[in-house]
Image (cartoon, rainbow, N blue to C red):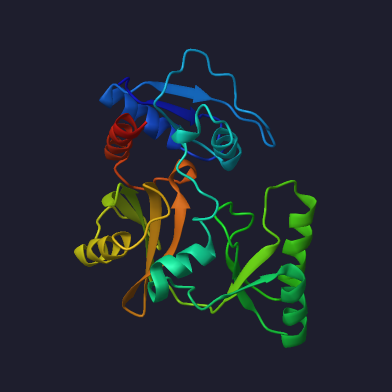
Length: 259
C-alpha cells in the first residue's frame, strides 16, 4: 500500500493547521499536497499525480466536495446523519450536555422568543456550523436568521434550543478507531495536559458509540461533571495544542490499513 497523502487547504485565514500538518508530514515522510479553495467552490481543485490513500483537511467547502466525489470520498470521515444533535442524543444519552434540548424550525423559535421576551441558548443541529452556538434574545435571533437567509450555504432549516449551562472548561480530543490519541484544553485557556478522569470518561462513551472511525470529541466540565459538548468532523477541525504529528501518524496508518 502507498503512503497516505494529505490534501490540505493552504489558504484558510487565521489558521495554522496547514503549517502544522505540513511539518508533521515532513517529519513522518508522508506526502503533503497543498490546495487552495475559493468560497462557494463546487468542485475539487485539480489534483495531478495524487494517488490514494488520501486524507483531506480544510474548510467545509473542500471537505463536502471531496465527500461527494466517489473517487476520493474515503479521505473524508463524515456522515451527515451521524454528526447531528439527534445522533448525539441517541448515541451518548444523558452524557451529552444538550440531551434535553428541543429541535425546532426558525419560525417557531422566533415566535417563542417574541412571546417569552427571554434569551435562549441556540446552536446548529449539525456539524456544518452555519452559525456559532450562543445565548440570544429575540433581536439576536432575528438578525441571525436574516443573515443565514442571505448566505448561500448548505444549512438546515432547524435550530437546537436548550438550557444555558456554565461550562468551566472545554477539551478537544482526537479519536482514531475507538482510541483517544491526543487532545488539549481550548477554553478558558490553551493547555496540553489531559486529566486522566477526562480520558476515562471519553473512553467509556467512545466504546458505546462513535459517529465515524476518525473524529473529534469536545468534552466540557459542568458542575464538576464531565459532559459531551459535541462531535466534530476531523477533516475540518482545529488542532489547538494537540500533538499534530501523532494525529498525522495514526490517521495515515488507519487509511493505509482501511483504504
